[in-house]
Image (cartoon, rainbow, N blue to C red; front, side, top):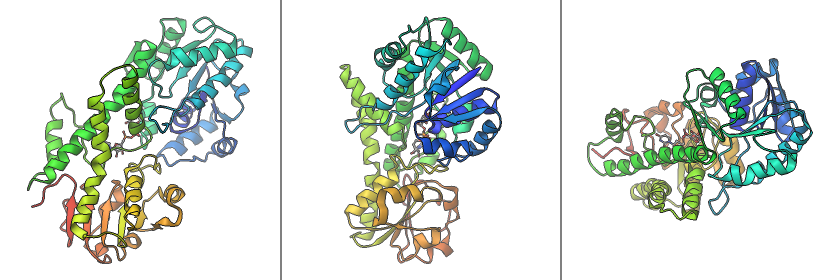
Length: 436
Ligand code: UDX
């Protein structure tokens, strides 16, 4: 079985590495030549636990990396994993996926194979039928379902757990028509993930499932964040105890109820905006989804107002921000709430010092010399008037009274309640915990 994976971001690189490590012959394609050279050497351009190890195993077996589409001509299966980023108006940008399927179509034109093309990239319902299929048929001069198959196969992996999720997905969604290609796809996935449920459905339903999944996760987070704001205004209430208790109800479930500064990352914010846009475009009411998004957009304002309440004027004061990655165990800062917070604080002329174990380089690309980058917790905290914990990196658990001594004013705002059990000599406020 020859497999091609087109687009070597989090999803594509994890998928090609895992497939190759399992013994499939895999070609990973990316248009970025420099990136391809690095990946071929076993260097991963992003920080993702276990990815480099898995990539190296794959490369030792049968993984090849190339920026030349013609190398995929013998593929039986082609996974499309290119990004569909957000445009300013909230819609998704299809130029990369259009380019990728155009190149795939041109390869299919010359091949004797009957490949299956799996669309893993997140696209709004109707995109495969209305845009992707016509491009493939035009460029290949062949017929879908007869000469090649096209299947929607949305991806649910979480960054920082990309390898685990690629090896053990919670479900496999296959969207398309009932054809020989669908039967072949089902057989492939049943062998690869013997104990995982496979849902076979129509294209549009598969595309919708992805948005439903992410918007529900966003809903849970906005729900608990709104509750955390209420809890914070009541003495002796801890939002984590509330979340753990309601999470025991199987109808609710315990995951994604961890309050914080709001959801970020390259998927949830983008998918919420795209779904709201799409819903409105088909004449549906999106009041609820808009409220979820608004709750998320407003969440960091609570942190800023708490800080202003405690410090008075914040302009020209040094404030320490701990964590710029959108979540721990990644160096990804895309749509990170921390980045948004820094931008807002800079408008208020705050002097910012940041520390993040992995994301400082990416942060520098956004702020240049506008903020101070610290290589350690202690230098980040030095002479600071207040510290805000944004990302729950394990390292921040080590914060103690000794470390806080170097601060000018010991105001600690903990958006993740990481230090809630410590007796700290300072003013400690945790999002979602009422003052005693
Ligand atoms: C998400 C989806 O989980 C995944 O299924 C999809 O394929 C891609 O989008 P990811 O972007 O990697 O994955 O991050 P995720 O772990 O979902 O976290 C998203 C954001 O929500 C982060 O900013 C995180 O800190 C926040 N979050 C998550 C919370 O604030 N509380 C929670 O309980 C969970």
